[in-house]
Image (tube, rainbow, N blue to C red; front, side):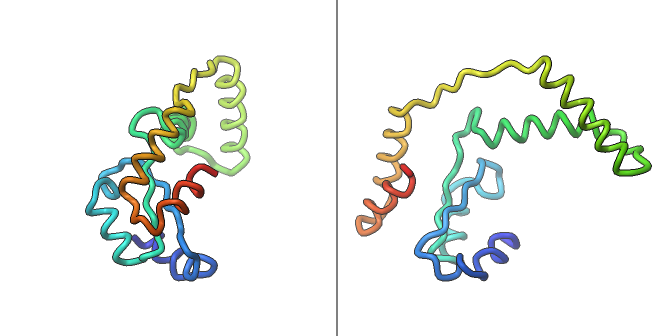
Length: 135
């Protein structure tokens, strides 16, 4: 909540009609209690969870986990140049072997998600939320 408070108490977020917080399904922001806690503190904040499996956030987290394990450990660098060189060497090796993945989230899945969100959005905000999420 420290980051949220820092952001939500500064412009343009303080007076924005709505601010979407996109979060993964980590234990600190999963479920109705987390949503209620955010909404109580900041009524214009809307928590949106990424898909549980294979979201783009999880893909990024997976990549940085690999970088942490295979590149920056052990942390025995004597200067920033060594860090840069090791990261660039890893990037070259990784890009040479990486394989694209087949994205399975379809436009029908998006329509279903928006319909589910609309069922949980008050009527006066329903149309607005669908348009904002679809964009």
